Amino acid sequence: MEAGGPAAGAAGGEGGDWSFLDGELAAGALRGPPGATIACRLDPRVFADGPCRAKFEALFRAFDQDVSFQYFRSFRRARVTFGSALAAAAARLRLHRTPFLGREMKLYFAQTLHIGSPHLAPPSPDKQFLISPPASPPVGWKQVEDATPVINYDLLYAISKLGPGDKYELHAATDSTPSVVVHVCESEEDAEEDETERMRRPKPKIVQTRRPEYRPVHLR
Image (cartoon, rainbow, N blue to C red):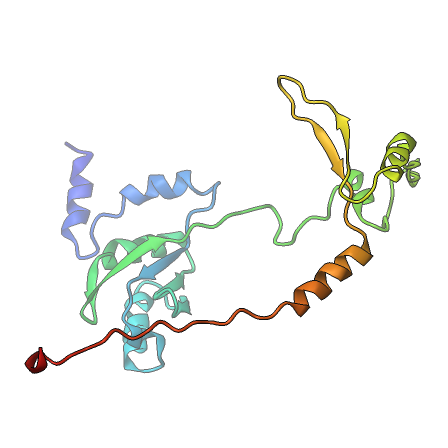
């Protein structure tokens, strides 16, 4: 019961009992406790300079005079950065789900992703040779020469013997695979003749649909 006495006395004060935060902040000191909060579902009047914004900022300046604000109008949110994690926790505990300008304001701790450096690291040296032309190729790297193209003379000879409309079977069909057949395209002269013949054909006449006969009711 002695351990509960100081806590109960602190809880009866105006500031409330903050002893439960000491262990959490001490445990999170190594991983970086959140020193900022995100205010959500804000009234649009907060994003314009005026008394509404001043009233909004006054709520958080009561916990830290050096607090800074970043407003995101499109998301109806604002980032509030405090000087310490304790001030951020106090503001979140007091102002979370409280009414402000007719809306319920919600506060969440801002999560920060630490990647070790604010700048992107250069690519590893073993992958820089993929850049064309290579900026810094590794030792012993040489340009790969293009291989000699493979020409199937048997196929060229068989196609040369074919005429327009003929076909040449490369592989016969089996029970599990289809056959591979090469068809010779039409010559340019034949294609031009077909195009000329198509242009000479008369255009088909569009026959309009006959309107049905109508007789008034009194003449039927």
